[in-house]
Image 1 (cartoon, rainbow, N blue to C red):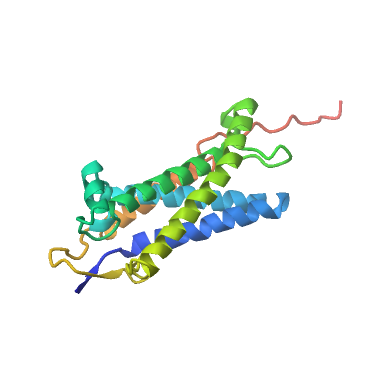
Image 2: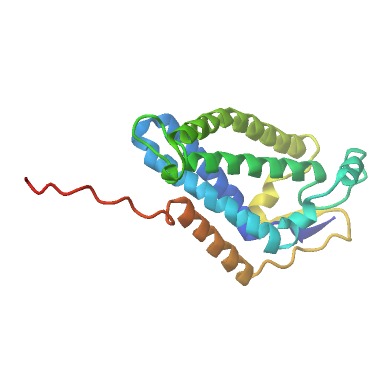
Length: 227
């Protein structure tokens, strides 16, 4: 057994900040209309985090890159046969991660155009017709239950690997380090400061655009001249 550097700090921060943002979004939408502004803020945080993770999946360190953990059917078969050796996301876990990112992305994007039929409109509401906004709002509400199911499966899978298969997946996401058996597995490399600055800059730009930064302000109301 040896210990390697597995998850870099940006990947770990992304993971736990996404947990906080999703919990915050769920909690505020359940608290009622008075909390919808905070629901929007948490939703925009999810958008920014996902944008960061997509870029980090291209320029981040070894085990955070999509090219390292996304694999085809052959790797999946080897994993199911117990023949796969590696670190980071296993072939099955990799596809579940992509599913989660896709569903969270769908939920966050539809929320940008949604409305609550009372007083709240998403930041990009004005870019679509009222009919499309209603449709996206219904998709946004329906996907909530699908996300609950997928997140529950993710948590159960982590607990199964940690307590049944004795492969602790939680500790490396906290410390960044993991014990491995193969001597061929190396420390994560790459994903330095320049890569992180680029990923952060793109994430900030995406959040700015998602919050309506590209939409011109509405015209001022006509002035009452008292005639």
